[in-house]
Image 1: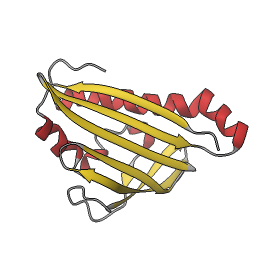
Image 2: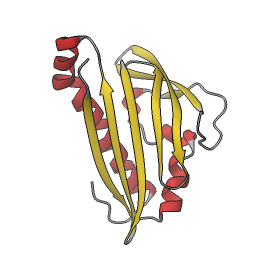
Image 3: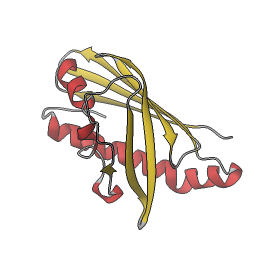
Image 4: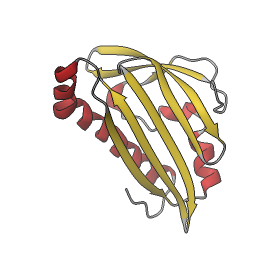
Length: 156
């Protein structure tokens, strides 16, 4: 199983508590996801994030082909980090760490996604020519959106 990694750093010009509050609200997932993914949350319980929380949604990675995606908030340390893990979905393996650190003028947010597509060399090829780029595009969109949600000078 080939494992891939995507890492992203983002400076958000807002206090860590405010950034954390935004990211802890699952209903904000729609806002920070590119519209062409046709992201729809299925879960009824959208309480503020907690360890063990399951969030179910549908996403359209390929036009016309919807995929069910179920993630669990596996680890949380309030104000510092949380981890979501795929339980059911398009990847063979998905582990997404989000960390938040107070810095001068705002918050340093880091993402580390460790994932596997499966399918051996074919999965590696698909990641190289499409999936990896698609994931980078999703995080680029989110960085732009954070600039709108938290106006100020942001850096990726």
